[in-house]
Amino acid sequence: MNDLITDVKNLEIETLKNLRNSKAHNTLRAYQADFKDFSAFCVKNGLNSLPTEPKIVAIYLTHLSSFSKYSTLKRRLASINVIHKLKGHYIDTKHPIIAENLMGIKRRMGVKQTAKKPLLINDLKSLINVIDEEKNEYKKHQNRALILIGFAGGFRRSELVSIEYEDLDFVTEGVKIIVKRSKTDQTGEGMIKAIPYFDNKIYCPVLSLKNWIDFSNIQSGLVFKISDKTVALTIKKYALIAGLDKTKYAGHSLRSGFATSTAEIGADERSIMAMTGHKTTQMVRRYIKESNLFKNNALNKIKI
Image (cartoon, rainbow, N blue to C red; front, top):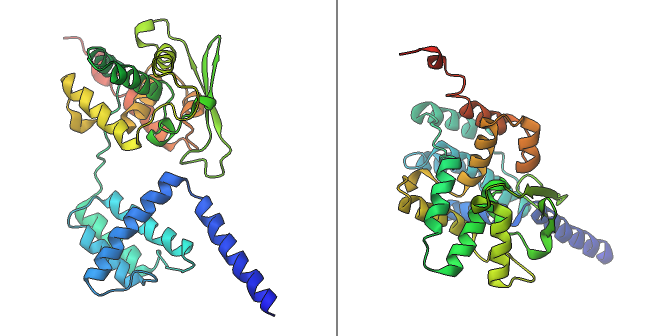
C-alpha cells in the first residue's frame, strides 16, 4: 500500500513537470509574473489566490479594467488558469460570473488595436544607417546583425536572443538557422529558417551576422548575449535617433515588418508563414491586408 502511495506521488510530481515543460520558458515566466500581480491583489484585499474562485477572479478583472487594456485582462485570466493547473488546482475561467463580467468590460471600454508599427524597408535602412554611425564598435556590429537578422528571419524576440552558434549553418546561398523552440512550437519540433545573401551588401543580414561573429570571436553558445527586452529597447533607441517616433516601435516590429514588407512585394501566405512559423493564416492575412491598403486603394484611380 505504501509503495502504491509512493508511486502515485512520484507520478504526480512527474505530471507537474510535464505540465511545466509543455510551456516555453519565456511563456511560463510571463504567466508567473501575471499571477504574482493577482496574488498581490488578493493579499492586499484578504482574498485567496491559490486556489481561488470565479468571484474573486471577476473582481480582480474589474479592478484591472480601470487602467489596463482588454488584452491584458485576457492574458491575466489565462495566467491564473495555467498557474492553477501547474499547482494541481482547478479554476473555472469560463464561469458565467467571469465570462459575463468580461463581456460587460469589453462593451464598456471597447477593444482598440494598439499594435506597434511594423519596421518597413525604408525605416529599417534608416536604423541601419544610424547604427553605422555608432562609435562603439561592439554595439555597432552586434546591433547591426541583431536588427537585420531579426527582420530577415521574421523572428520573435525570444527566438532571436536564443540563437546559438551551433544553430547556424553558413552555406553558399546564405545561412540556415535552427529555431529549436518557439511560442507556437511547444513540443520542441523546431524549424529551420533560411536567409539568403542580399545583392545590397550594406543591408545584407548574412554578411552582418558573419561580421559580428568574427568581430566578437563567437565559437559557441549564444550569438546575442542580451535579453528579449533589450531587443525592443535597441529598436526604440535607434528609431529615436533616426527621427522616428520610438513609442510606435517595439521588438515585434521586426517580425511584423518582415511579414508586411514581403506581403507588399507579393509574397504569398505560405511562404510568409514558412519563415515566421505562424500556425494559422489569421495574423498573416492581417499583415497582407495592411500592406494592400495603398496598393489596392480606389483613390489611385483618381487623376488630379
